[in-house]
Image (cartoon, rainbow, N blue to C red; front, side, top):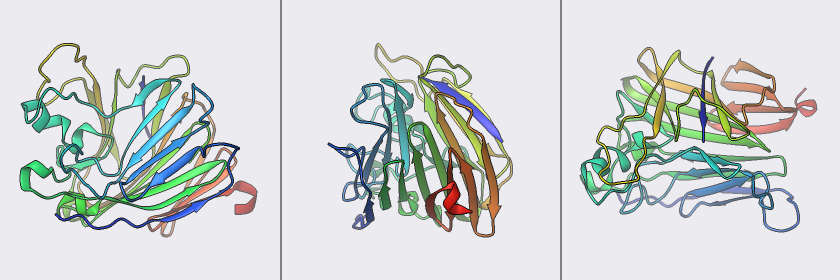
Length: 297
């Protein structure tokens, strides 16, 4: 189990099965827009110090102002950015724009073989779309699943990610990946500060609970530095598989506030079973399900 801690083409049409549960009076705490591939999950919209999780897997791919960041996420809590979209806009098609800002490696998404990622529209005139294929909102949790396989332009046969948000502070991320040839897989995470620093309530601890053997590395360097003032360093981490493989699964747990709820992880015949915070979460063949622990017995 590896941990990190941080502060602070013509696209296809997207279709998703939407399931809504009851929510508190007023605006729902979570919503998905499958036609544009965005989802927003909040602990409590009325709370200014809420936790907010944003997920993207978009029909529009990396076209124009969009980036090559399908199946990516960001996390904010207590008014602070924890897991960030990294990089700066220092101009159109600058070295930083080409080598970092627009690329998958700049986002909390999957890359392989030393930072290779999704299609960038300006490189080959293809969109590289993703799609939100499932969204479920319930009072105690949300599930969102994205398929980014087309975004990798044929380099991968499968790139699916399910994110389960257990209110108020636990986030599970499950990736299923496959390729025709063995790859070294990279689970990327970005933050404003070093991922070994913590403080107050605005912390985010990340654990890889299941998947290939990995090593964690981080740097505060960009491949090409942005040009301009007020562009402070950011930190870029990755859990990198030690061996090459033609398929991989990652099960990651992010704890906002670095809380210490116990978790058990079991490898199931066709997926994973996790028990934490009074819930049983299953990941099976690209599907996610959440039940109360007593119902799962």
